[in-house]
Length: 592
Image (cartoon, rainbow, N blue to C red; front, top):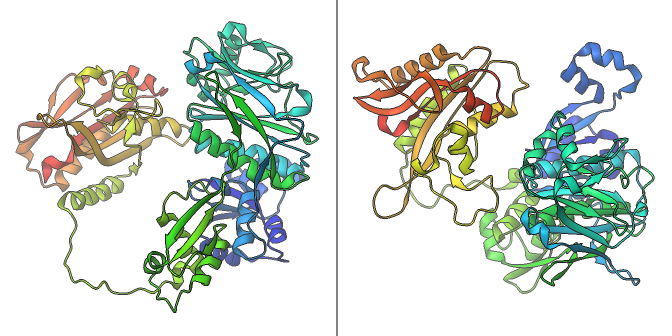
């Protein structure tokens, strides 16, 4: 889950406390449904990452002030920065009222963003907003940048869905234009550079840059790249790669123009709402945002940010039943007060119904059960009474899940680390990257995929594990990972349905292929499963995913249940891996 860092002094200030013990902070986080992950400082973090010698070398440049690292739920985007977290805790502690956010349209007319038809080829949506008369401090400026990074890593999916750009409006002239041009036609000075580059040159420049090179594939193969310009032709940004240096924000910036280009209009709106709500508290008119009009090629004119408040009517009996309280134990007034502490302003509309106002910061509230969860948090999980269920029944674990748990433990005992990856992936992941033809795979396709990342249900666990290896290449070698989860196949009968199949896959990645270790793990699993020696063997075969002459079928009772071998170098190259690796994949259900 995402982790937010907040200094102890800042937490004490926002909660009107002279001091906090670590236990008190831990308890406060638990009461609010969060978890205190670590108590540290700048010096301790550097010493942990780069060693004590480096920390000592930095001397007084590092602070010893106490920093709390707090884990927040992945869907609570409003808590991803110090501003949002501290305000939520203030409201929870009844030290402040939930703020009222509003988007205003200036009397002189809104700023305009025109969208060119060419953007439909790559990133068709853009949303914009203005923060006026902003006062940055070094801490709030750093938090502003950090929140953008956290949003990019979470809801924006590494900028593939949404890319945020922030600009000093006083250096620009409206109206603005969002268009898509051939790479050779885009020339500007990118952020923190001293000269102009074409888009083609930028792709080469950033291919060796550790932070930005991960975003290059998003647009690299497109015939046109997106670009945003002002009325004078000054380039604001080339999303999702880099902003222009001309309009970069500084501590002295007073008016911030925010744009977010996207392939998903809804997520772009959520991102914009989250960003402006968190930092509008630094505007001279708090919690007020200036709206911007976006004009699309089809004639539509949309005004952003929406900052929409939603009304949700919920039955009181549903809430009481959900937390196990009677009428006398939980009155309507108490329900409304507790929900308001969670920034969900509620009022009774009758003896049986409460109306809950969901603010623009709470995009995680989708159903009545989400409101119920917040009510339970406000009451306190430790304060909920446990009771025996009114029905008597005898239950036991499903045989497949029981076998899965036993195998999971055995593989972990062998020194392998379990990973959990997405059940959906791209067509490229299960075919081209594994050197397999797509038409030979019984893949279940998504009818209307929203992103190229999630087009099909996975037919193998290997792509997910290899992606995990890629993301953890900086860790000490060797990497020994496994996953035991379901894959999905198209049914072979005429029904056209899909079937789940439980697989176990393991990968060894290091300076040598480690095939003997993967083979040994397979032998150990067969021993745990109680498979007689004469019913299990390996039979040489050729599968394009594996290295020629280093691949075998895993045979059980004469039938193939999986494959094992040394991964082909081209397979590893598809996942940007440079060291050898071995793997096996087999069907767990065959051993029930």
